[in-house]
Length: 393
Image (cartoon, rainbow, N blue to C red; front, side, top):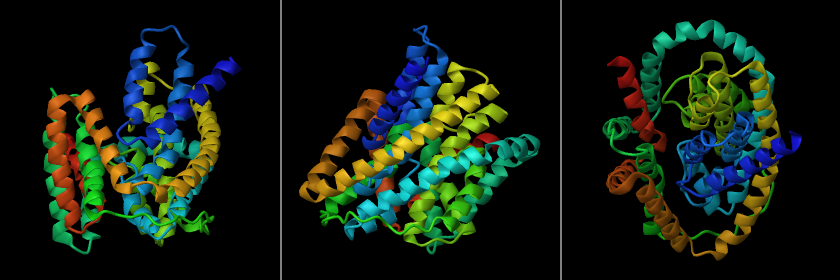
């Protein structure tokens, strides 16, 4: 049993590395494939859970590498583009990713420590809190907009992406609508801008960053559980709320992002245990495989989180060093073209021609919203607006 456990753990870490490094191939896609495999085999469901958790946690470490080095994030790392890309263009891309890795590593240990208090607190308060979910989401949305210097532009970006998200997510005949929607808004749009601006990447310094972990970690610990239990909110929103709680500079904010990214994923498993609600694709896959989490299964998940998190931390350092040494020798414009082509092919294969149309529309919308000069998190209106309307209508 131990050998099988280690095998599925390592396989999960391997696939989490793949999904983290290749834009457009998300853990949700692998999770869907896994569910199909599970129902056609007699393999112990526990091993599938080990695989999924290891993959999900590894992904939260690795996915900052393409978001910072390529400017091509997924929904959990879109906020890393601005500070991360700025540091990359100053030759400090290695430091940028390492800061997120330290944040994620700290989050692993924090998650283990606060699991029991969280279970007690949330089980006592969730029935009251869930009545106010849409109003809390509205409050968060207003807060995100009012924090911007260009408030009307922020409202415009939030509204445009919100309308787009509502229309796309209600297309019942479109397979995996989130893929072309988010790929266009947060991935393809940034790649096209990078190609247009012909960005040249300077030589990167392999220097360990100075880490001030206390303040950003406090913000992450307070904000992440909130966003983990509310639909439509992710680590990006948790990071913004956490930054309001603990004001951070650019580098500390990257640490905060890493911590919230991993904490939100970890708490999604805890929320599945407490309230049987899923907030991530990984949690959805686990619920499909095993309907109810027992205390023993949750304990196993936490063990997998701990082991895979520690391994992923060192793996992230190795891969970041490798990319930092090679990035200046690579034709960055060509690399962006190749990445964009991969995104188009994946969208075509999964979502078909209609997915390509949505991808084009989302990309144009993303480019326009970026040109407005507001934070890219405003484009998360594409998920927040449909969620709010779902609860209100």
